[in-house]
Image 1 (cartoon, rainbow, N blue to C red):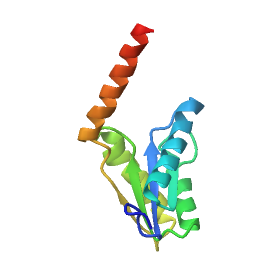
Image 2 (cartoon, helix red, strand yellow):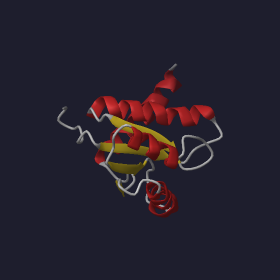
Image 3 (spheres, rainbow, N blue to C red):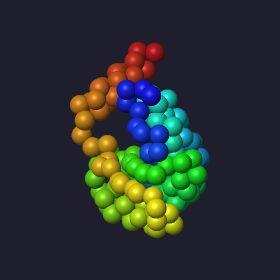
Image 4 (cartoon, one colour):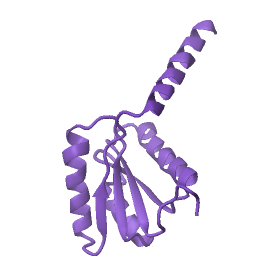
Length: 133
């Protein structure tokens, strides 16, 4: 078990908004894979709040199928807004209702973190580098 991994019976669902653009939806699959690899968490599923599949309900079922007894739903959003504070918790509760023996919790969105400024700075520098090209 890696230092950051969760108990083996914990599933994690990363939820974004969902898009009509397949490339935008595919990015969440890459984020889920990167999270799985970097943390050693065995049960990680992507889900879209709307507009695309897998849905939160589908991802929740996949977690349970893989042995999750606790499902943590993480809104992959920057700020606390209606989607992350109301819509996603409601959709998670609806999905959990299909699995009454499985506990679930919803995290806060990404929010303010000092590491975010490093990502912003890297994007700004990448853009500046294109001016020199």
